[in-house]
Length: 254
Image (tube, rainbow, N blue to C red):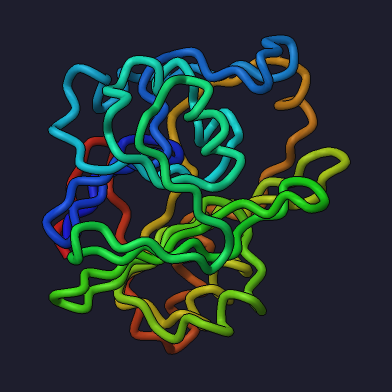
């Protein structure tokens, strides 16, 4: 298994012989809901990959229909015949962009790709009432290796009903509280609870990046915690979990 960090929520997973592009934001800007006055973000440093410098991609994996996961300007510049696995809201966006091979997965639905890789949609963040997005559990059906990915704040009570342990967990450790919505991205204490639930061999932070944001929304978002705080909590927990912190563009081999 290899994990390449791009930035923010964007990753390349190599598992079960497949190269998977996850929640790609590769071109600037990132605008929420088509409203620059609300939220616009840019990379401060050149992104590790562009649509033209990506390696050959076997699958797209999109966790949410929100712009920071399902980024239309990036997706418009990718090959729209690439098979895509997506949450129901993200599947609608991909369909509107002309993607021709989309598998929409609701919570706990599974998809087996070429009899090598099993992808399970795990209950993820509830963005608004009735709209629960996806986390994912990826399993190499040959080696048994497992990878859990969640970019927001999962309902742990639901997650632990069907997942016991994983090899790698990729999830946020720096929380964010949004006006009217409350906390939608997990902070250090929730990340520790996730680690205690899934008992991964390795924990890799996500939803971090060197970006600048303008607009009204960033003025009211409050961050909670830090990677050093989570590292300290993890060290005191007694878990055997190892924290890995790849730089943008860096590949980890598990």
